[in-house]
Amino acid sequence: MELKDLIYSRHSIRKFKDTDVPKEDILKILDAIRVGPSAENDQNWHFIVVKNKDFTNKLADVINTKLAKVVSRVAEVDEKRAARFEKFTKLFTLFALNAPVLVMIYSYTAPPAAYTEYKMINMPHEELDHLFLQNCGMQSLGAAVENGVLMAMDLGYGSCTMTSQNWAHREIEALVKEELGFEREGWFLATMLPIGVPDGEAKSPGRKPLDEMVIFVE
Image: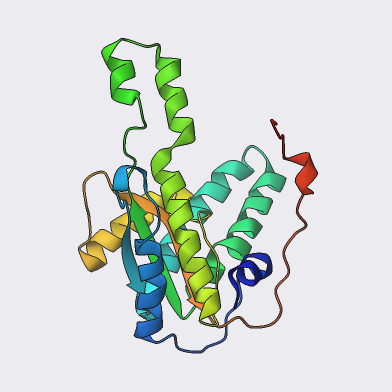
C-alpha cells in the first residue's frame, strides 16, 4: 500500500479472525515502533508479546475483578454511570484479549524540557505541573506506536492502540510481575496493541473538517 492509502484507510480494529500471526510479522511491527521518534532519543518502550491464552485469561480475570469493584462503588453514587462504565470496558477493553497477539507496551515518563531548570530557579508548582501536560515521553510513544499500526496494516493485519485498560494498571502490572517476572523501576503499562487479521469491515467515526483546526500565519 502507498503510505497515504494506509493513513486514510486506517481503522481501530476490535474484532479479529482466529488466524495466527507469525513471529516474523510481529517482529516487523515491533521494529517499526523501535525506529520511531523519541524525545532525546530516550526510546522509552519495552514490549511484552502475548499469544498464550492462559495468560490472557488471567488478564481478563484481574480486569474483571477490578471492574466489579469499581462498578459497585460508582453505582452507589450514580447507577447509570456505573452501567456505562461496565459496558465501555466490555466493548473497548476486554475485546483485546481475543486477539491472536496482544502487545503490552511499557514506558516511563522522563522530565520534560526545562523541568530541571525551572526547579533550580524555584518556578511555581503550577508551572512545573503544566510542563507535564505536554508529556514528551507519551507523545514519543504515540508517534512510534503509529509506525507499528501502519506496518501491521501493510502486512494485512489490523490493530487498535489502547489505553482503556490503564485504570487497572496496578493489577495488570502485578500480574505481569508475578507471572512473567518483569518489573522495572519507574516503568508502567502505557498502552496495549492487539494485532490480528480483521474480521469483517471496520468503520471509523467522522472527523472534523480541516478548516476547523488550522490557522495559517503567512
